[in-house]
Length: 125
Image (cartoon, rainbow, N blue to C red; front, side):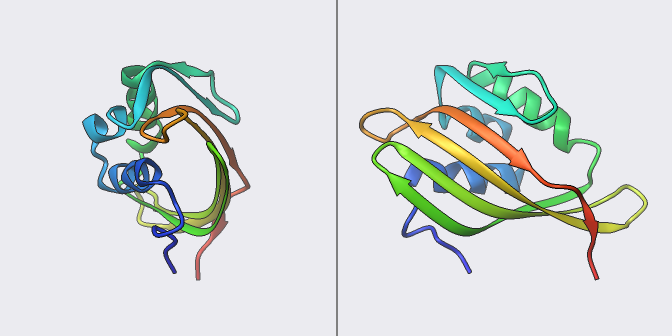
C-alpha cells in the first residue's frame, strides 16, 4: 500500500530517491541548511552531507527498500511510518519498522529536518 497521494510531493520524491539510491535526487529534496538526525548516528547538516550520510549507511546493503505504510500530516510536519526491507551482502533478508518525522519549508517545497527512528532488525520469512 502506498500513500503518495497523502504525502507532500517532496516527501514522495525523497522516498523514491532513497529507494533508487539517487544521491543527487536525495540532496535535491533538502534545503542547504537542513538537518538529518538518525538514531545512533551523528546529525548530518546540509543537503550534500545528508545525501552522503545516507549513501554511507545504505552502501553495505546491496538491496534496500522503504515502504511507507502510514502517513500523518499537520501543516509542515509529516510523519511517515515505514517498513525498511534489506538484504545483507550474504543474501539474508531482513526488515525493521521505522518512522521518519519531516519538517518542511512553509510552502512544502523542501525538507528542512528529518528525525529518523528505527527498530531492531528481524529476519524476513
